[in-house]
Image (cartoon, rainbow, N blue to C red; front, side):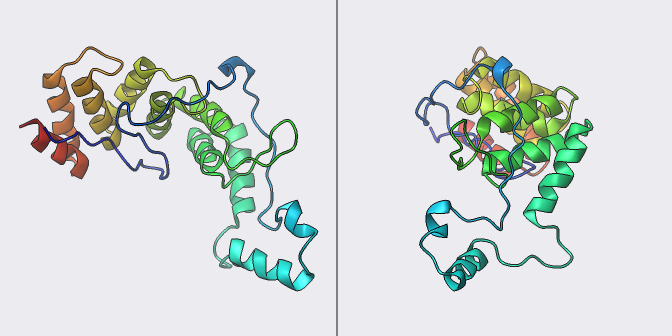
Length: 221
């Protein structure tokens, strides 16, 4: 039988749910109760210290232009975007909290570990922001946090929690959550296997035009 397809892109891009069992187990992250939201943001005007000591001013300028080309006057810089999101997120805006989580997950907002080393991305802080947004019922964050639990990124892997979060988002019409919930029902990950319910969720996602769900319905035939 054709392998079922999980959602690749979410409403806010860049997070992925890999096929069940396809991804190696992640190292267990710190307990959620110890998560401290990062205050760090490394400006796009900064470059790694190892280059600072080896490049001439002209070479540094060329590198910076390659890393971060000048922004359009009409568009906020990544730093401005971060600061605006952080302000709104601290004020409790669930959309901003979710957006900030995406920035930490993708590495657009750069944080550092306890030794000061710059991290490529920060899934622990991302998950913490997704938690805050999801707790307010924001569907995109529920879906994103479900992906984190399904993959064991930033939190301990827990497929049952992933299923519940996908369900919360799916009930609000999040099409990728509907497809992923169908996958979980079909595979029996985090919930007893139920092909009938899997088909129901695939059908709901397919009705909204989701191509993965359409392919999954075809694979079930």
